[in-house]
Length: 106
Picture (cartoon, one colour):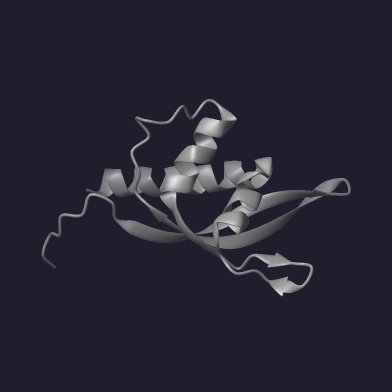
């Protein structure tokens, strides 16, 4: 396979989100398509900086359901998911693990 230069490759991963339930947790999942994004312009220590970074990195979210069934992806769905601490941290963890593995493999 030929090497293709692409500054912002896209990739899809299953994101596992731990949801508190009773005395334990439930593992929910969604599919996230990301694009490789530079973290230089984002303050990832602050919640808003992490949200801004993920807004740039997330291409789409799938397998998200609401009370009325499957939800269509758009900015309002993305922002609702990013407002949830457990989901935001799971997205960041999944993105970081994927990009780190990509960088180690190149």
